[in-house]
Structures are given as structure tokens and as C-alpha cells.
Amino acid sequence: MEPVTTTSYIVLGIALFMLLNSAAIAVYAERRVSAFIQNRLGPNRVGPWGLFQPLADVVKLLLKEDVTPERGFKTVHTIAPVIPVVTALLTIAVIPFGDGLYVTDINAGVLYLLAVNSLGVYGVTLGGWASNSKYSLLGGLRAAAQMISYELPLGMAVASCILFVGSLSMIDVVNSQEYWWNIIRNPIGAVIFIVAAFAEANRTPFDLVEAEQELVGGFHTEYSSMKFGMFFLAEYMHVVIGSMLITTFFFGGYHLPFAGYWLPEMGSTAKAILDISVFTLKTVFWVFTFIWVRWTIPRFKYNQVMKLGWKRMLPISILNFIGLAIIIYAWNHYLG
Image (cartoon, rainbow, N blue to C red; front, side):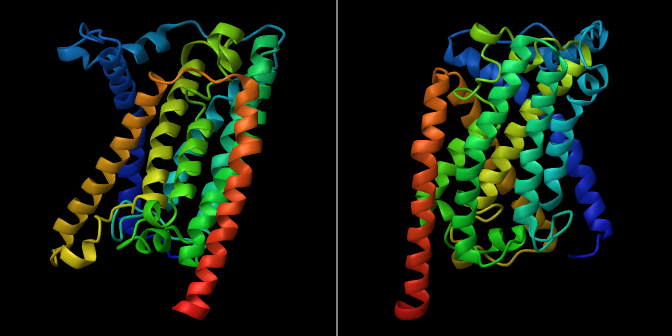
């Protein structure tokens, strides 16, 4: 593990600031994109082009009454919304935003990411249980079942990427894609990871944990004020984090396609600006994809979600891992 330097603290501060603000930007973008898809105007009253609408939403949530169910478990009910927000913030510690632009590099960065990412569901599950409401409890149980179902194929997709690297460091994962991105070397793993990322973020068509037509509001039915706001913030933060991980594992991170062949030598400042710009554009594209899919594909039924996870994605991800392992071994020992 590398020591934490001044650059690391600067990167951490900027990353935290951008991640917290990216949620507000994503909310505005979602309203604009959904309005375009549905042939509506979208937010256009609060500020020019409705740009201050996210700020108005925050003020509204702050002014709302904070209600806790009388028969609920008040301490857990209060703590639960904080958990998914904290887990989203913790993930940025090992994500490289550019050449040398990361908070820390640990030799088990991939394991750290998978471990922290799996903790977010506890906030949803505990929130549903602590509300002492049948609708909230059903939403929490669905979240737990969905997380278990899609954590396995997601982990296998990540493991198939590690085969090309031979390291669990996120820096090594990105550097291994300087010439060939993993989307080219491992397209099946990429599709599995992207679908699992949608399921892990509880986004349509995998939003069974909310399912307004069935469960009123799902796990956050009994939440109001900023407790609901924390869940709302966490959802969009996980969308942004999911987009960053898709970019990092399968789309070269901050690398341009075959950059080593045609990109000239650049100064450190120009290289940093280019790396951050490339990484940001890729992340924005996947955030847009999250939004686009939500307003295009209808919600799956619960049995369809479980069948897709256990009977389709898990077996395919295992076969993909085994196939890639055989190919890489044969290439290194017989063909290379």
C-alpha cells in the first residue's frame, strides 16, 4: 500500500466534492432526459432552464417534517439512510481518475471495492425492517435477495478481468487497458457487469425494491425529510459510482483507445487534464445510459429478476471465466 501524500488529499477532496454534486447534476439530467423521451419540457421554472430545481428539492426536503414510525426501531431507522451514502463515498478511495491521480493504491483494491459495494444493501434492508411496515419490509427483503443474486455474476465478471492483469490493484487493472480495453478482450464479462451494475443500483428495470405500483414506496415508504433525501442521494451516487466502475474495468479508465501508438508526449499538467476529461466523459456517457434505460425498458417481474440472475447470468459468468482462463493459459504456455 502506498503512503498517502498531499496529492492524495487533494484528489480525495476534489473527488468527494464532485461526487456529492454529481448527484444533483444527475437528478437534473434525469429530469431533462426523461422529459425529452416523453416529449415534455422538464424543469423550466426554478432558475434559467430549471437549473436550480435540485437546490429547490433540497430546500423542500430540509423544511419537511421528519417523521419516525411510533412502533418502528428508531435508532436503526435513523442510521439506515447513512449507510448507502457512506459506502458510496468509500469506493472512490481506490478509483484512479488519471495517471497518478488517485487517493491510494492498495494491492487488494478490487477486493476492497467489492466488499464496500456489497455493504450498501444493509442500509436498504435495515431501513425496511426498522420501519415496521409490511411494504417497507418487503422492499428490504427484495433488496437483500437481489443483491445476493447479482453480486455473484458481478464478482465473476470482475474476476474475468483480473485474469488479464494478474493483480488486484485498480491501477494495474487500468494500465493493462492502455492498448486493448477489456470490452474488446472480454465482451461477455462486460455485458454481465453492466447488467449487474443496474441491478446493484436498484435502477429500472431492477427497481423491485421500490415498485411504487406494488409496495407504495418500498423500503423508504416510512421515510421523510432528509432521511428520505439521504436514500435519494445514495441512489444517484451509486449510479455515478457504477458508471465509474464500468469505465474503469471495461472501457480503459482514463486511457484513450490505443493511446500508446498515437498520443504524443505531454506535460504533466496537460496529461492530467486530458486523463480527467477522458474519464469524466466516459462516466457521463454511462450515467446517461442509466437514465436512458430507466425511461425505455419496463420493470421486470420478480420471478424474471431471480431467473435472470441465477439461471442465466451466473452460469454464463462462470463459463466465461473458465473459458478465458483456458485461453490465457494456452496463449501464455503454448502459443505466446
